[in-house]
Length: 308
Image 1 (tube, rainbow, N blue to C red):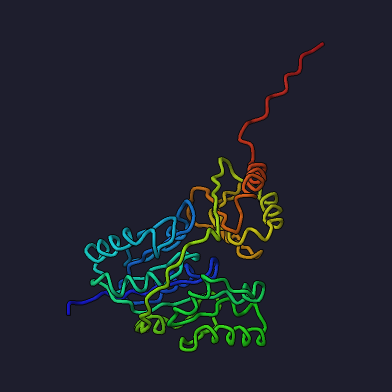
Image 2 (image 1 turned 45 degrees about the vertical axis):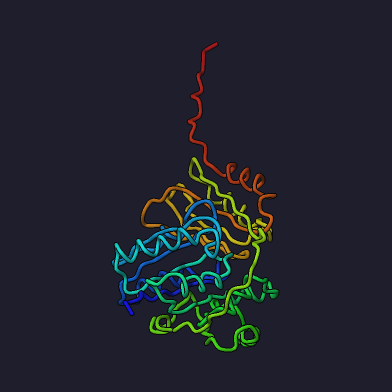
């Protein structure tokens, strides 16, 4: 049998830490990796954040990778194998994708690759705040060969144990590793050997999440932006992007009411993406508030004093 490039699939809910794990894999692995990123929303953000020496990045934007993008996905795999000859391929699926169909397609329909393993990242803090796991998240957990219970530092030891028990009821085989910032021995992430070969169930995609984007035309007043972020309602589950302030550009990450701003060494064009349930009903209000934070670029008119 000809050589098959191993493929690792990263899955998990929005904001759980998939891009953080991807960056960790790039920085810590000695393998020559190729990355495929499926970004939910109108614009790709995560692909701009991943930097490494021996890698090729192809962003697949919008839609669900397990169905509407399978043709493009297959073509991307063929192209990346031919042009980059990677030792392993890592696919970051969108947080709203159900991975079972993708796993089946890779295993049965794409002879150039073999499914090496599915790694599912779960947000411990979000699991405590939102204990009901939806259909998509349950499939992500069930399909996993390795479960990372990320952000475990944000919950108590008793809560962590309870969450592990809950995950075990959905998947009794995959090891569960508590992590902070997805820091885990890279040796545990490769060679998992995916054994599950169950024909995926037919599923119709409900529009569980919606997204919209905002491009500022001027720097934002930081205090105004922070007040806006603190007032975001529960319909905004995830937001991320590059925010221009007068003192420079910042990377903005928002998940479940928690948010951070991190100074960027390089200039990036301002762009924010908001993701949530029924978020379109709040789009106009949020956009208006963001525009109100923009610092006017129009210089004040000089005051002409005329003697009486």
